[in-house]
Length: 296
Image (cartoon, rainbow, N blue to C red; front, side):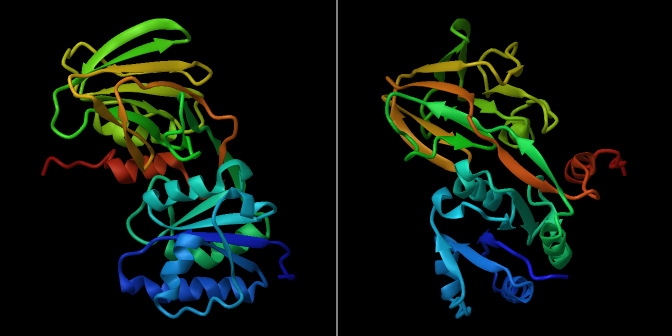
């Protein structure tokens, strides 16, 4: 294979030292392919604790440092993948999740296939799957400028306080007052996450929809609702306490009850690297045990 032009960005997370030989192999494979390596500030700091040779690598801290990148490797699980989307942001660099644990919906490439995956990227033997992102707008910055997410935006009651009331408006028209522990606005990608555990439907990842899913609603006739992603969803909260919790993917904050939020489709997408052998339906069957006889 000829010398590869450009460079590849890497972000990862690990909790077990057993993964260190794989990380060393990953860096050596990239170097052997003449790829310039850029590592996220967070991951770079962790690798230095284990005396990795990083003398020839660069560091990035946000999407501004990723312009012109060939690809972004997310090393870990689905949680790490969501962090990677945060790093990539508006640069829209295509992301590949290399799983170092159990199979994930997002990080579906097993670490044993790492070398083949890198060669496929360098040879442009892949397709890109566009995934819409949810964007949250409020009167002040709640998420430190990172007001977008791949999975969902969630409003929840704080700690063990009584249920909250979330008033929802769809394109300016009153939709419902949800008496519940919270409310999830999920993307198709996020439909297999928190929304699914609260009774929401599985929506194919290339669908152009949002899923509105209540968390433990007081009225059992309230069911999840699928709406077009071009819709604007306005939310306001009433509660007996003065605060409630909001989160977007893995980032959360406590806000006062007078906050209002508008949820809409983000102006840019996440681009996921996809190889021909991967099927979303295969992942569904494996993760959710579809088609398995578990009666015995």
